Image (cartoon, one colour):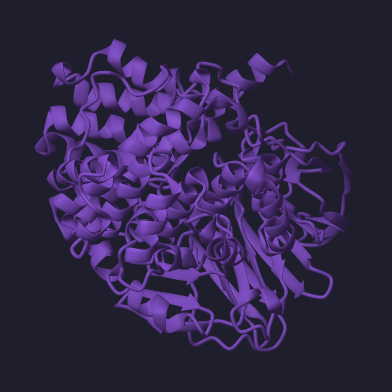
Length: 616
């Protein structure tokens, strides 16, 4: 069957037409237009010595094509020992299977040949020690230094490295699991976690709501739990649990704030897991158990916008999911917009506007490093994957800016019900940009055509940069800060007279952004002496200070920077710092020596990113 005919058949099977027509995910081998996974059960044993998970995955299937007899799954480096299918008599029978040649980006297609349309298949396998989703930490890489730790990062297409699945956000499934782990270690998953569980006989989990594979998550380590509210809590290493509980105290209020805007929270509990420092990103919105970087623990709750962002994914991303990574902005742009709205409810308009202005300014600054063809929210090529369609980081602020523009022009009385209707009407579904545009036109623009023309919408989705029609956020506090910064840079305002006692972390972040590449080493030394910036406990502020220090040649900050690079594994911080150091001949040897020691502490994704930065 040719590709176009296959796609047309899929559309007919699924009842999709026009703009919402079915589009196969180019990053998946799965034949989910013929058969879809409805439920997954994992029965696995964790072996820290071998750095493997061993056991089986059982897939419950819905057959969409009455003639199909093959199940194609995504895998990466899985060692498969046997595959069985459930026959009409309820017996597990071995079936034939084959693996395609390995592809560096997509892994291997697993083809399972079935004599009949089996309701279930069971795949017995072992993960590789180099599984791209899993990081196995030695005791030395944890806070206590006593017990090992393992965690997953399945997004975007790494779930296939620890479970044979249809690894595409177009497929959603419920799951259950039984995980065996060494005594003394707790297992948690993106499912219903019981803080009173002991793990005797294995740790068991149920996820009753259907999720895409990239939200499949696991963590195993020396963990304690703290309750934050009636439906919120946090897990962390024993030495970090009290600081985490303090920092996350407002989580219950955040859930209520989000519900007041976008309807009920539909996932039961909202718990969080604070991971070891090597976690490569800020947070991962795994349902029922958000994974968080410890870099958000500043001691003063000044970085809780990260929590608001991951919580917002409970509506945008987890509840309504991009159908493929080409439509990434539907997850992250929507979530970034919702984050600002949550912050406004909780902390007021000025705090939200400061956060928004900084976000927009950093987006504009990033454009100089992004090729114009990667500045669109969406390409016109239907077969483009996430690695080639756009800059992933830009999708956050640009997508949010589009929604903000619609809100400003339509008014919240119109826009808020519109956006809630999008979440309610597409709950637990995977969607495309074409579906959103169709909804936008029918539910908002048809009634309020003055809000946005087709030409401007096309510019937002397919054009480079930020459209000239976009209104920039302006915080009065940050406008005042601009005056202070300009005077300081000109030498008209001495460092000793900087009145910073009421500055928020956001104001420090903007100040350091604005003096970067403008202040020399002497001025950076003055700042450091006056405010102890090289030793700050706020990692967002510290990163910006170290970046400015590298550009200014302020090398007295190197000892603290080295500690930072050894302690922190978040890509957002370490990759730009190594790149800045590598760009200067006088800093190159220092960067290489630090990285030589720090590399083993980093997640494989971070290692890959820094390797590329160091090679340039």
